[in-house]
Image (cartoon, rainbow, N blue to C red; front, top):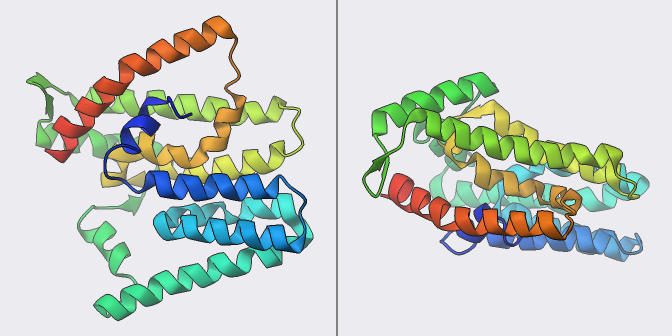
Length: 239
């Protein structure tokens, strides 16, 4: 995963992804140990710190019931408290607990939709903005093809858990689906960020077990795509 182009780009330019992914990784690492009360509390704390950086992983909370069952009530207390803490922080700072959600709705045009509507929104948005990379014009189709390629990649890896023989496969399958699938049903500015936001489903990379030559091919593909995706982000988004 650490040589995956989207991870390389968005962990080296100023995004908070590296923080939330670190705490998520710790959450899974702790849960793979003995599931006593102390470890469940530690993993819950780690997940809560991740939630502070990336609120939308709250959608994945039901998946932890698959893994913890009777201890799930211990795990969920801190994330719920963190959620209230975030809303209270916005209320103190702005007078409304829903300031961030209002920004998403009225500034970034975020709304629930479906994959087709998401592509239609993306098409019209790119058509209006005329994005370029070093003078090369990017068409709406380029953005749709880019998103679909990453979506197919992640969904294929996630579904491989069905055939996996690891003990936690149903937990990882549930978590990754809850982290990834909602991204397909949101239109607005986040539609541009589907490849980056999909990193929340990083346990799917567990299924990317490649032989020597396949790995070399994957490595070459990553090396080629890293500068391209960097330029795409810098010239066609930030600028």
